[in-house]
Length: 254
Image (cartoon, rainbow, N blue to C red):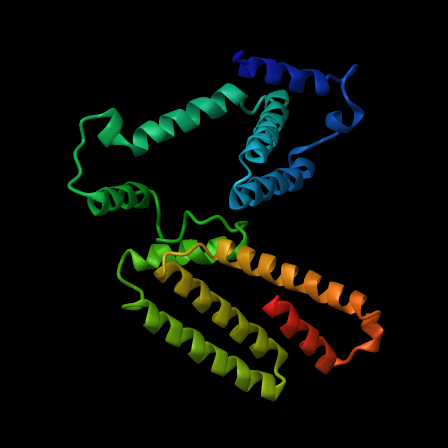
């Protein structure tokens, strides 16, 4: 198989951004304008990983790599850093994070390694939560917060206790819904979601994957429901909730 140098892709990016002969769309992009595309590519990689479509994973990883090169080229033009600087920094970081592989440091077990890792990071922090970016997606941020505080012992003893907290928060939410207090409803809904994510952490399950599977399951059932309605020559406007429930239960069986 013919090997391809990363330099060829870097040169493609340079030509796309060329002020005179480059692509009009690529030339006008900035750090800020390209970020939504970068985030989109991350989700597309994740989607194909969930689907185990390895050919598409390869394709989407290429798109994601191109986003990294795009951002690096913008930085190079502004004389901030280059793609090589990015590669050097991540290489140095990985070597530092694995002294048991690249140096002679010994760890008794995984827990010993994790303790060393947290200590090495916490030397630079004033709070345990300082290295969690504010612009993280909220689900990821919750997971990071919960993992951080759990490492110093602030967590429920087991997954059942964590689940009991979800039930407690659901009851609190129910009370506020009855009172119609919009501000408190939002707070309690947030608390319930936060507690639900903690259950996922205790069960060592990825909440994104769990939610993705639920979305997929719901979508499949809904499409079956739609087909049943079409087969019965009906329209959505003809149906009430009882009718929908009938078709929904039928879709669950099939």
